[in-house]
Image 1 (cartoon, chains in turn red, blue):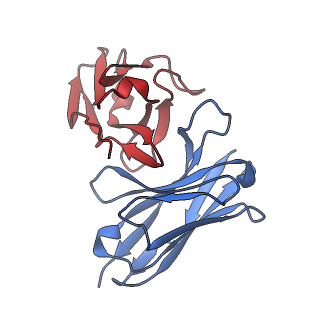
Image 2 (cartoon, helix red, strand yellow; image 1 turned 90 degrees about the vertical axis):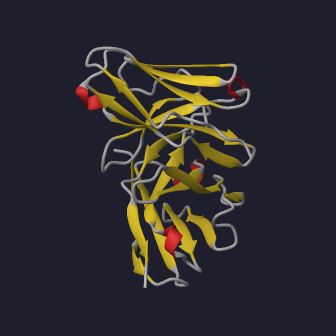
Length: 106
Length: 121
């Protein structure tokens, strides 16, 4: 089955840019979605189909996907962005979630 | 406001059964594909099941195949997850999630608040 890998943790200074990766074999050929999950809350979709933002999501959130890596970029990181982030895709008839990345804003 | 509200969680003994419900508001369930996702304490998200808009197509993760059954009652605007032969490792918060129905993607655009299932003797 298809597997994806995320770094367990990423740290970013307040106001700087954070990049969270999701690696997988030729993941660039897949549609990758990203979710933010704050502690004690349900996940929220922040990027769909590699780089699209749902309404209400700040333009500080962006995405890209090429080759073997999909990337979620958070520009001008704020304290409220501190959360777990998950990539997700469909592989045949199965949904694959990455293991999640804990973003810490310093 | 579009909402998903799960219910039915609780404490159950190993080998027992439980049925979760997910009532949807402000949209018509028959037009949407739906999923169940769970999250064990301190762990990541795990997809467990999908159902098509008509309710005739279902998929399951290997971890629950043969034990869990997903279904929907479009007339009641409610999604269900029947869980049987429960194991300690099924302990988790269970979320229902709607797939984007616009045709733009298959992302999960709306999530419920989750219901906790604890399997323990």
